[in-house]
Amino acid sequence: MSATEKLRVTNQINLSKYALPWLGVSGVFVVWHMISLSYPPFILPSPLLVAERFIDRLQDGTWFFHTTATFTEALAGLGCGVILALLLGYAIAKLDWIDRLLSPIVVASQGIPFIAVAPLIFIWFGNGMGAKILLCTLIVFFPILINVVVGIRNVSPTLRDLFRVYHASPWQSLTKLEIPAALPTLIGGLRVGGTLSVIGAIAAEFTSASRGLGFMIQQGNNLYDTALVFVGVLTVIALALMLYISIGWLGHKLIKI
Amino acid sequence: MTSHPQTPPILSAEGISVTYPNGTQALRLFSLHAKRGEFIAIIGPSGCGKSTLLRVLAGLLSSNEGQVVFNGQRLRQPNPAISLQFQDSALLPWRTVEENIRLPLELGITNDTTHPQSLIPNSQARPTPNPQLLISLVGLAGFEQAYPRELSGGMAQRVALARALITQPPILLLDEPFGALDALTRERLTEALETIWRALSMTTILVTHSIQEAIFLADRVVVCSPRPGHIMGEVAIRLPRPRHWAMSATPEFGQLLQEIRALLNPLP
Ligand SMILES: Nc1ncnc2c1ncn2[C@@H]1O[C@H](COP(=O)(O)OP(=O)(O)OP(=O)(O)O)[C@@H](O)[C@H]1O
Ligand SMILES: [Mg+2]
Image (cartoon, rainbow over all chains, first blue to last red; front, side, top):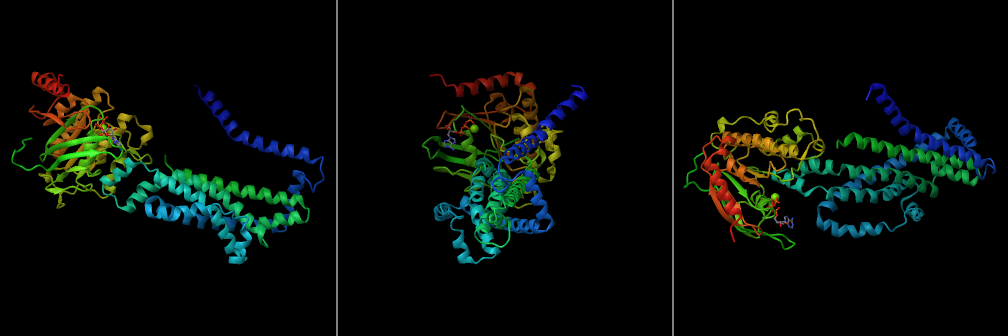
């Protein structure tokens, strides 16, 4: 294969790799714009109107204010959820008695519709940031926990034997075997958790808040300012995507296989 | 290698029976005594319990009956002096070839021969562990930085062999280390293993399906029955050392081959 041919092939690959997703996204905007032409803006605002509203909110600083609030809550909730899930998941995966003791409770707790009982959480724990982070944590916790348990349990028995042959300490087994072996599964759980944590933060802000994207969306709903609602929703999508992509990137950096 | 008949065995299996939880009996009253520095080859049909035996000897699996005695004491769990090469290589996929080979050293198993547990005589003569040297001995020079997914099955086996050797273990248990190799590489590597074994005088138990390989390497070839495995007979190999593959053309070698074949295939 000649150099130019090779170049052409790489260009084709890059084209389909990067151009197609953008083509898809722009397609959505075009269709959206076409449909919006036949409706009043409070039913379906055009993308242009949404962009205009976004610039408004960017200039008066409220967009940044609400976005940071949501992002902080989501990130803190994700962090707490991850730490809890790692500790508990590892214990469940390693110790049979903890598995038997806690697994039924943990699984049953997943039947709780956290979003629906959010008002209760605010009555119990107050209206502050802490309660919102707690709600995020509760939502994020379970999917990550499952991935931790599955990841640790699936470590190949032969590799475990190998570490036993060489008298590895529990700490060595954890750092040199279990974490690297479970990492792909863990990253998978984190990606789901990251997306869920943003949704959790929005749900919390819907129930009770004076700041955050959830609050902004609700404001838009109340004022029939549908363009503002769209600004909020698109920002939420962007946040979730950003978390998803950066966790994936982190995983890519950490996982050598 | 001269073995004195009066020296007590360094590692012995005494009447081992193993039945797996699903009811499969893998071993029945298997007894084997390895003298210090001896090279034993175990040969037997597939599924007769050879890997099971090595797992018991390594302290990874406890037997339902009988016991393993190592250096005068009952073995109840893995011992750093006993190194096992797994049949399926068991490489860490996130580590390069060199990092895989170094693993036992990282886990703190050193070949420090001043260690009181050291069971190897002539310790002064032993070279320091050198992953690079081992890598070239098993013919993997140039692949130090490769990941296991980039290796063929035979290459992975050679990495596993190098890893088992890096600690220069007093007891070396090998589970078909050359199973996936072409004939030529196999001959080269068996010669290398014999050289290493002579230099380090490790007590070695090798499981293999190749009668030639067993004769070439061992002081004693043990023939195992079909499942549940027990010893059907053994053949002492008195060929001079160092050994060369040219010896396989000698009448003595042919004689031993016939003898072991006959043990494996008893006439009805
Ligand atoms: N974990 C296990 N659970 C149940 N049965 C097992 C297990 N491991 C091995 N066996 C059975 O025990 C018998 C002996 O197995 P083993 O692996 O020791 O054979 P082997 O002699 O090493 O065979 P090969 O030469 O093919 O490697 C086989 O019949 C196998 O099915
Ligand atoms: Mg086997």
